[in-house]
Length: 535
Image (cartoon, rainbow, N blue to C red; front, side):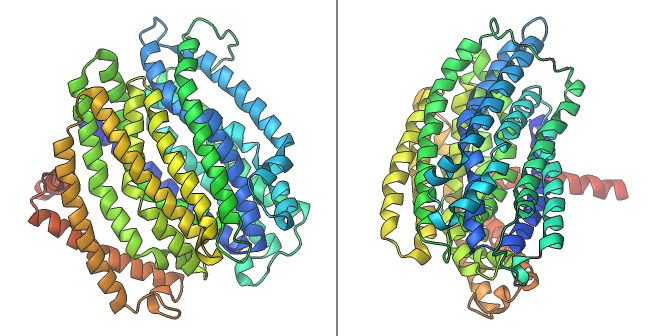
């Protein structure tokens, strides 16, 4: 368990640095093109397209099949090296082909994702530079999951730091060369150089993020060589497992296309796809630092337990991971909901539109992270069919709910779409846990629910305290201190966050939460060790 804790800490530290740099990158991007502007939704949609296509062909399929397959292949005499080279070669060919075809189809894809005709030419120009990202995103996932399966967790989480550094440099160059939207330059005319530097710079960062992972292969005893002999290493089994995941991702991306069409329908004067992307970036900060780090560290262990048929150990790891996630994610959700408007003010003066979208997303942060945990549990069991089923339920809720959002006024349409996504996550989480319980004969549900109600009660108490303190500081009306400027917003967020943390921990002490002691034990042990060393 100690090794899992160290791995989680390493992953969390890498994710934290990457996310902080990601915030800096997002802040610079907002300064460059604004949040509610002619270019913002065009750029937001153009950069969402490669991520959507990448999710279909790579992300879920590789996450679903790669780690379990490599764990099984590691018993081969060569330690799985032949399998890995064949799989990476095949993946690179597929990613390159999809990226090439998608780039040629850029005008069609831009129209499909609902960009208004007035913004379509600019969005298409951005897309030509952005769609090659599909190849590098797929390569990054492929190389990183191989390293994770070999229990080398650090490079996968630290590589995005390189991406963010490159992207920040490109954005800085853009602002120096062409001015900033935030200082009154609306960029009414977009030249080839502007488009190439903005979108091409983002692609360059993702390319660096992927290619740097080759450096770390030698450290785990691997050396990449192209191998086009794709038979003989159970790729047929992997393809069968990927079938359900592929269907699941097609369904989620159909829902994503509908979300973008509805949010873009509000028009350039209102929050749309770009505002939603920035709100999602904030939403993903605690998920990436906490849930992804914890789950990634436990994932290989659960796959090993499943391979040995040790269901009791599998359940124990699942329960430990789920409770660790909830302990931190519930507080993160509560704190971000209260400080949503000040945080949005750090990015833009249009903080009310972006803040409302962020709050709507945060309602679903806890179930979203738990679904991520449940999906990986099924994948470690070699079951990709069941995640497809509970994701299909989520997609159905999203499609119906998002289409109803056409009835919402333009100023709240994007927030309405985000709220529907959160409601769908709740439905998906309940169904996922019920199906996993039936699949494994139990998931330590009594203990997990016992922890959850304590976390939720403590979270509600911290929300009350944080909201009260926000009012004391002046509230979130125009000109109020917490939203008067980026520096004031950061100060207000930090102060409110500390107040809420004290209340959250205090209530867990009163409720005698066993997970509180387990959660802070590593910190207390380290402090005690330092105290002894200083004597």
